[in-house]
Amino acid sequence: MESIADLPMLNDMDADYSPQYVKVARILREKIESGQHKLGDTLPATDLAQEYGVSIRVAWHALAMLAANRYVSRTGHFDPYRVTRQGS
Image (cartoon, rainbow, N blue to C red; front, side):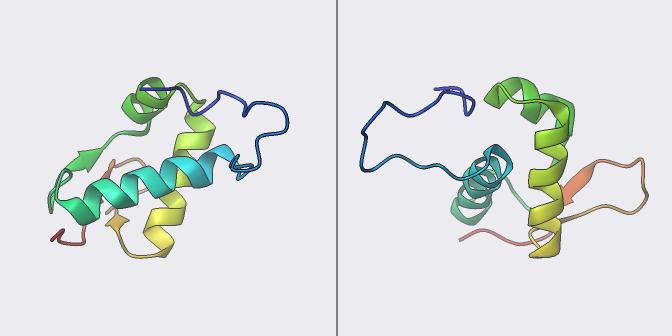
């Protein structure tokens, strides 16, 4: 998989200039909706950061965005996020 951190090519009209955390959140949302990440699965930020080639902070922001949209949640401040929305 291409790293999220890769920059688009110059003059690419279809380039996605969204922030990295939005790109990661979109990918994770798609995986949740498709059932790749199932209800109750944990999504550790450190693993996601390594998988997508982004910083831990970017992964945290992506998970916070998913939490705000009720795809994931966590019980405590130091607990990992868990998938809370059932995929198709």
